[in-house]
Image (cartoon, rainbow, N blue to C red; front, side, top):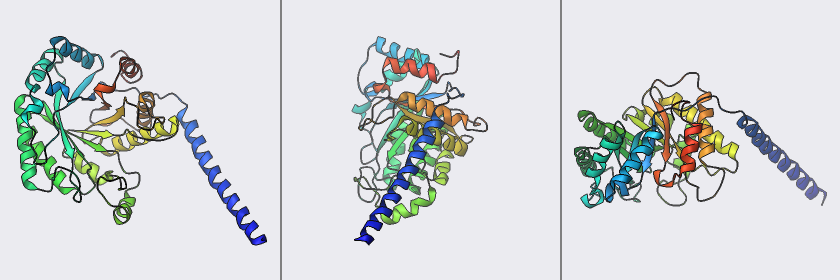
Length: 341
């Protein structure tokens, strides 16, 4: 009986110790979160846009409104959803039947804003998924499809294949060849990728214990530092999908955005243009993640840098179809440099 009491007592002390440490972490992050960021944002920013712009007819007024929105908010790059790829690496023309009119409208109403073809699919991994990038014939058809969109007048190709795991040589090879294509045409290549892994050394453990794939239980497809550098060396722009945080407090969510901004820009900010992805939607689980938290967190990450990156950087807004006027106003007030809005 006495032994059982001692065990329960020690267990209680251990639990109290752990809870105390957790409380200290929460308190420390809360204190860190309070000061107003000093850094302002930039006028180099991206926006993911819905498929209807390339797939459906629009009025001249709708195009005019889109152009005004992009100019007012200093958007330099728009990723117009133009896919997804079929399993064989093609995109049926019916899916982008309005692309030509869109490009003409962009030239008229948003001159200087790059309209990129946003293309991707669920990447086949370990037998699960749709597009098998390990197949050279599929990669060839992807490249031919890219050329079709460039012929239509798009200013670049924006890839969003998911999941992409560290060490995916086929995807790197596709990036290399796509950049050869875009550079030959005087266009750009951008890529959306998951946020950095927190600890690179944990990747081998994940691989050994948890399967890859698309099921509920799989290890996250986060790039290591080396793999992110490899991608950056093959892209003109890297958009980091920093959203879907699912953390319980605003200060923790903000710390997430700050950490990834600082680490990513230190790592590849001198190699390529970087867009830190920020959300204008509410996650499935309504935690603390929203646009104000994301913008403040990115700015805190900029504050932590010793110097600005050598290449342009900004935020990537996800997404055009979820951003309402009050959020655009908040973005202008809290991100754009003073005097630029």
